[in-house]
Length: 239
Image 1: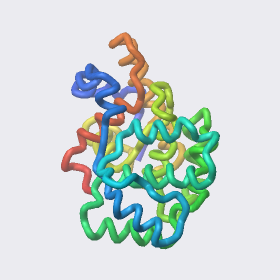
Image 2 (image 1 turned 30 degrees about the horizontal axis):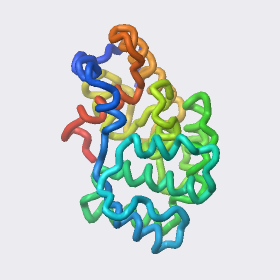
Image 3 (image 1 turned 90 degrees about the horizontal axis):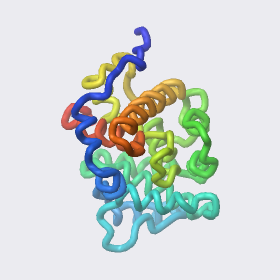
């Protein structure tokens, strides 16, 4: 299949309307439920550093919680870097309610899926998304067992510490669904995205963000567009 010409794809009007809401509300305050007790117990059970993943009584994580963690990345110890990685994983497991997905996550942890290596991308904080993604997905393979492209993009995104000008954006199955079915990216494919595809994705969102920044008279982050892409997938994502 020929590559879709992304320079011709317009931002859907519904996304342009959503961007009228404040960044604080749509990004900083965006929270998702997490299975904190499960993550704390599982990390402790396999004797990996970085526990507790969340404090007692915590049932949700906000994007701004991880942004605050990432603000101190250069000075974090290896254990603290692993805790940051666990928290990215916990926030990313939005649909972990089913026994099947929980069992899959448990197997990944017990196999040591998240070793200290998983913090490499966030520690380096590269200027470009491509270099960081290649660290996590060298030659199209997972650098860390069981953790694929979607996790890699989450780690690189949260390493930006919430900066509106951070160039890296999350790309997962829900975001991809909207890009294909609503935005017209016919050649995107599913799941096993190479570095080149992630680079094209970030470039597309950067163009849209620049256009919307000019239209709205404020800095629009690529994550604000990613948030709309994720939400708009609805029940179409097949997860």
